[in-house]
Amino acid sequence: MSVETLEYTAKDFSSDQEVKWCPGCGDYAILKAVQKAMPLIGRNKEDIVFVSGIGCSSRFPYYMDSFGFHSIHGRAPAIATGVKLANPDLSVWQITGDGDALAIGGNHFIHLIRRNVSINMLLFNNRIYGLTKGQFSPTTNLGQTTKSSPEGTIDNPFNPGELVLGANGKFFARVADTSLKAMTAIFVEAEKHQGASIIEIMQNCVIFNKDIFSEYTGKDVKLDNQIYVEHGKPMIFGSESNKGLVLNGFKLEVVTIGEDGVSEEDLLIHDAHEEDSTLHMMLTKLQMPLVTGVIRSFADDSFEVRMKRQVEAIEKKSPFKSVNDLLKSGETWEIS
Image 1: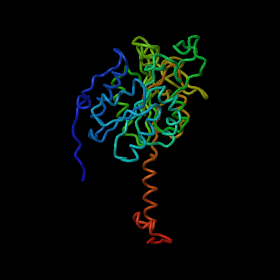
Image 2: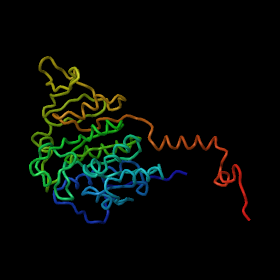
Image 3: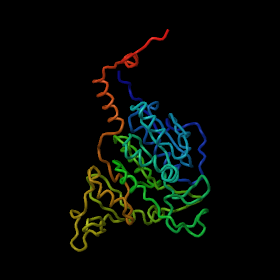
Image 4: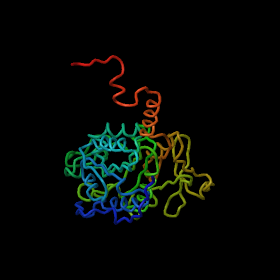
């Protein structure tokens, strides 16, 4: 028997807990976007679960009026996977940060993606450890001075999108915390996708890494330094919508419409659904303009679908229909 899906507003997903992030933190905008997205995914509140690890972002489940787990550092994918496999009908969301996911949780991160478990992971990337007061993280810029790198970090940073695609990820998106409308739309798209959906959110830590993404998110540069890609649409950007991307050999190149005979027809058309991730990887690695939006969304069987199919096949051919059948198979003895 089907259960009627109730109609909600964003307010229905706001808990009675006081939100305790620093004033001006980008997490507030992300929370608002998630609360706006939840009524749009067509699920009842009791079917939605938020799981987090450790970090500023991981307070998230307290602020959502839904089920949730505040779990342990780096291990949220294991908890979220257990929730999803125990009840595949649930909508499971994992909230994590660049330290929680990519340092102590690195192995869990790549294997969740490799297995393609249907979990929507929101990766808050502020390129710093915020909760523990400003140490460099796996995404901190090379040479940046932090509390734990007073002479500048000598580590090469991770690009989260490269990790996702390198682990054969099927869905990767990137968005800034200043783009409320885009965040909401991407979260809805992530829920529609069957399999692991990873969304990197460029999140501003106003205390320990303020304006780290300002070269892309600043009001005066945003339109020229970001390109928002949409499936089936030309890769066009710029404050005058006159710039775009073309493929020149094995490299992406920025061109200007109207110069050197370039027209809009010459621009690349974004195909997020392409199985071959080569171009998706190129888009992920491009630094200027920075590519945002749903970069990859390839449909494939999820882990839980494959598991269900395997279990059903085994049950169909198995002579054992109960535990008692199994225990009484073969040689048995009665002890008196």
